Length: 161
Image 1 (cartoon, rainbow, N blue to C red):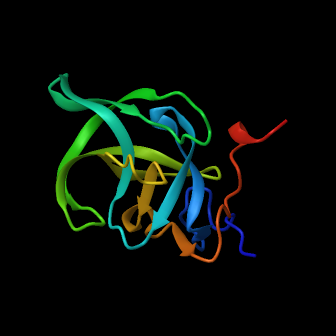
Image 2 (image 1 turned 180 degrees about the vertical axis):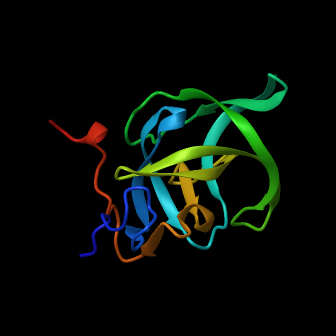
């Protein structure tokens, strides 16, 4: 079975890591130590399920406050986070509907490998995965093996003692 641990720790300078179609990831800048993500090369952008989006200004820059609704299987409380707004983009969902979404830049951590990604804030309520990692977030860093899941392993924060 392929292993996720290949290439350099920052995802550069070596062969790309091999990941399954779903993985545990972290978003440390947002206070998320573990969240299940669906890796989807058919999706251009990455998305995070959030609620209560509140734009505000700080030092002349646009920021956003939002509530991260974590994976219900893990039973973790919602997280209130803040991030600088990088952009607003029209994104087409899997049903072909277009939505204007706020885009933030944050750090993605997969098995200790970290790199910056753009992340759209969306309502993914009916979806099984609270996060979708699209091809822009994977490009040049990882390749997907759709026959496998969780090649990067279980995060230390979720391991039973």
